[in-house]
Image (tube, rainbow, N blue to C red; front, top):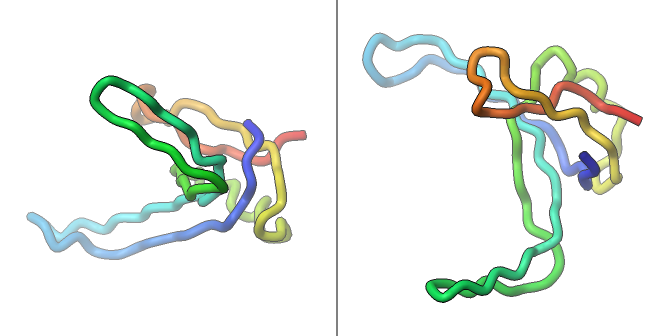
Length: 94
């Protein structure tokens, strides 16, 4: 999948809910063209780019360290091993 790479964010902490379990969230941020949507109930229009993010496998984050922001890259997206209904980025591809 071709994307315009913007950056990576990593968040770690202890949940304030329930039993205070540790958590870790890793995201890749990328720019996508603003899409036009026109349905009977809603219209969305614009121009330029908007930001999207996807979960990213922490084992592949090192591959992105030398990628400059706003560079177009190909990323490999696969189903998450613990939930096949969700996807995440697992690396750079050529």
